Length: 430
Length: 183
Image: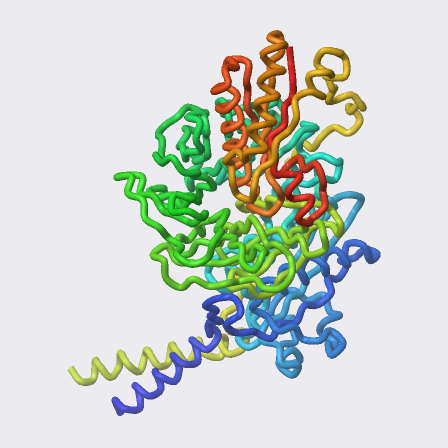
């Protein structure tokens, strides 16, 4: 009797938990889940091909780069792809399972004038349930942003961590003939120019909230550090000390800026308050010390120094000013960037006459080359979730911006062809 | 006692069985649970550059307006450096000695010394290297008796190449210190 009751209960419990089978993903590129991405359908309105194509474009770019999915060929789709049903009981999961899909993205839109409503759903075809359901209400011009945001949420529901695709990229472009500051979406769409300095603009960095950009400009005749508020357009000089005011980098809290100053007739790393006053001199050496990047904890800085001859990476502990050498191989290391998660540092190394992107752990282990082949790959920077990198590559003769996964796979060009674009930096989500 | 326990389990089983068919029909979903998360997207627009407000005027070249400065510009010869070096060669010293003579003869003229690099290093390292080149040049002129108050320095790193080509000849031209005279 007891035995039978217990058995029944166990079976019942198994039944109940079946629907909650989790899809677990550890890291990009480790496994690929079969995913069906359907074309979004118009709700009670005439179709708008422009809207549909833009949705497709953004979904394809973001999901492809995410590196988690194997895409089911849309030509094999059956009747459910053409049905508006966006609730799991209305979705023909059997049909999707027949095609081998574990995940299905369905959606719909309503465009009336400039008003846009976007419905987007991610279903677990095995578990026959909704994983991520979003309704976006806004303007036609916000469409790309809605889709980027849906992909970010999709990555959250599958991996437990938001995606970075609704961030922006700030970069330097020579489109006008002079280097000015620009901003674009992560996939290269909708670039806009932010400065009109008609001088030389260099090396931007975002404040952690994504609202401000700091950069160096020769506008006033000296390489000074500027701050630009993106939403007001206001601009001010943060540091105009004699000599270099370059390579400004915010700490993770946005309260301090590390940069190189040469007011002492020698390039040294300094820490500034966010208002521009000096908090601390972080290096003290006759050599060239440049390119600071913060550890996420704000207690260490990795930088480039030629104090042992060639430019190599060093890490200084801000509490006791202890400096240790990080890279031992190579003859010319540049532009380190500490990952937001803290476990890795990427940098450029000149090898066989060209810069390639490398990574190393902060303890000096696991040094690896991430890019290969022709072209200088410079200024690698992390996405805010540490899953992706953006950098410039000049293999076509001009510098162009590329994204790739942090393991070096999936490289894709994101800046306009032939546009001289460099010094990218990835903002937090907008 | 045994009866009570038996009743409890029986009740539990009956209740569970009663709920089970509902679960089987629509697993882990209910109408209310499936409401999408609604986001109102109101993209605050980033202020780009106002294209309409731009005119052609921008940088003016002041040396063109002053015959004295033009002459100084012609008289002060640039010097060149070896790859990744900021030390002055014998030839560079001879050029600087001539430049110092000119500056002594024209005490009203100040100069901005610009340090430049070839394109091969990293941008930031080259800014530092260019500054070292400008500084070494300034120090040498000062050692020849030119007041350092007349000598300013600035580094352009690899940003202003004389020759944009990517070959040894261009690189050698671009590794330099230049003199930009002012009143």
